[in-house]
Image 1 (cartoon, one colour):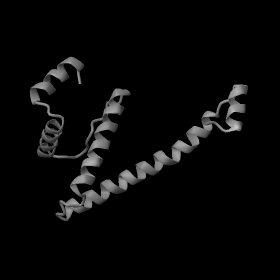
Image 2 (cartoon, helix red, strand yellow):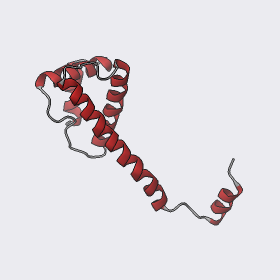
Image 3 (cartoon, one colour):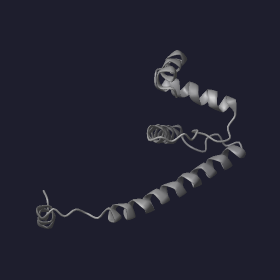
Length: 119
């Protein structure tokens, strides 16, 4: 149920100023970017010391899910950035194989999708 103030604003046709929405979104985006960079650095430090359990499997799965969805959304919005930086071919193949298994997809299906979409 709307508050009387909200009803009154709507009746007059007033809307929230876009600056209010943008101002509240900017700190959240900046905080998320800083947190992501800190997490990436912590993971890299853990791997450098041989700690392969720097994240639990459940935490890694949630992180991969969010990253996969975000990358897909950015590509759909026109981004041409590659999804990873400095990784080995083995890292890519292992991750790609896991992603295909998670989606119950075969390499053939990936090839067909790439030929249809040009991606």
